[in-house]
Image (cartoon, rainbow, N blue to C red):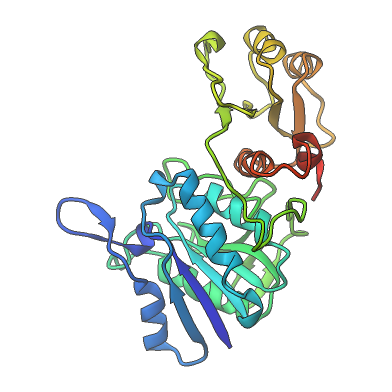
Length: 313
């Protein structure tokens, strides 16, 4: 079996020089796997070599082009090594575009540099190879949390980590891996309309404004120059300060989306006020995935933004 590894940098591709952690180039985790196993043929390409916290629109375009131009059908699966700081966003981006490509696509990160014996990056990589060998089609993020369990997340469902090193999914992890896949629930796989391809690559630009709620938020300080759409995230109860938000929603002149709501949950008045003011609620999708989907909606002109965003699960 042949596996394509697309290395992009991140902690899994970094080292510590005594002063700071920074990318080194190459793909040491794939090299280690090849040294210790002879069960797969690994081909490595490196279109990017960055720390994920520095990812820009052009980097997303480069990553998409690298996968679209890779002749995926030649491989048993694809592994994209990425940084953990933006894992939730990058995995959503890749999952939205390639979750239906027909082969397993796995995004692999590490909580520490690989030279640290406590790092989980190599185990995460080995799990990705196992998923590919098991032909688990879809886009996945295997990640060992601090409880020692190897979780498998749907790529479009994983959330950003906070100050701890663990990752969780919006709907809960899809499965655990103990040498075989043990599903915990039905997978959630968000998709986008099939408007992109090798001949029509997405061209991401910085034209989506993302707003996070916080106390005493002042919307008059926000600038909308060059903005095509707004994603307003919500507090955990799917709420926001509607007293300030409603005027902004009515006057900003571009579509405003709210994420995230859960189907079947009763809404607070503040959320209803925002929706009545013209904001569009997004259900059962993580804010990270909603943001990347909105970026893709604004990166094409075949469909209107609303039509693109309404394409389902």
